[in-house]
Amino acid sequence: RIKTCIRDESIDAALLIDLPDLNLMIARHLKAAGIPVAYFVSPQVWVWRRYRIHKIKKRIDRMLVLFPFEEEFYRKHRVPCDFVGHPLVDSIKLRAVERLASERLKAPRFAIVPGSRRTEVAHHTELLRATVERLLKRYPEASFLCPVAKNLSVSLLEESFAGLPVVLTRQSLESVAASVDVSLTASGTATLETALVGTPQVMFYKLNRTTAWLFQIVSRYRTYFSLPNIVLQKSLVPEYLQQHATSEALENAASELLESDSCRREMAAGYEQIRMRLGRGGASRLVALAVQQILQPPSFQKTGVQSGIAHPVH
Image 1 (cartoon, helix red, strand yellow):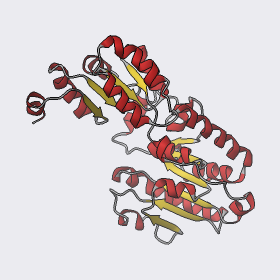
Image 2: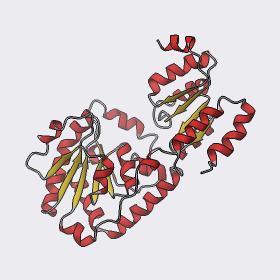
Image 3: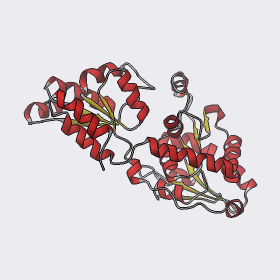
């Protein structure tokens, strides 16, 4: 059906978004038909399945990336690329001034973010329940808020946290993060969202035995795993992965972030750097501009990108 559409429709240009297994295949047919292709939200070739860079070089006219380090990677491999910034910069607001230390310590509020996929939640609930129990021993008046992704059933988590003061909610992660003192956040985009809100956090992640080998492979190419640390290329958010993700480790890290004003200030300063590095906003507008430019002759594209994408006028 895709081939038929490409053949029969009058397509001037194509914008492909994410979904690399599907979109790189579509890009091959678009390129064969002489249709210029822009690609937004890059595959993580800088971490995994690097051989795909050869397909990208052949099939994509312009790669549009979320993170500045991705632009460096693609330019190193001679792939036309522009850093347009992350859409979350436009949609997520920095939270209001946080509570006083005396209020935090008397009745701390924690977010429990187990992930957005069913398998992630299954791997994390036992760890998180044990962590909640440990934190309650240290802070008897503590409360916990757990955002449940729209694609997940609340019942999936109800039994896991039965008998504990954990409120399951359909509120957005942004709303939850803005209302707590510390977040325990599963690795993924949630760590970046939490950082943009400005909430101190601890990152964790566990894979099952059959997929744990992926962690060993990815570890060869990555020093950091949480998006805030990857963006900054330094250790800002504490990371606990696989066998290091224990209830004791999460409790201690969360308690330090709750009690230490210096740790909270350091994380807040790092979050400010992240916002600066993710662009000045307007990612969607810059993507649209890039699509317009790939319709132009190559000589115009070169100068147009420098003035329109790298240095956008607001």
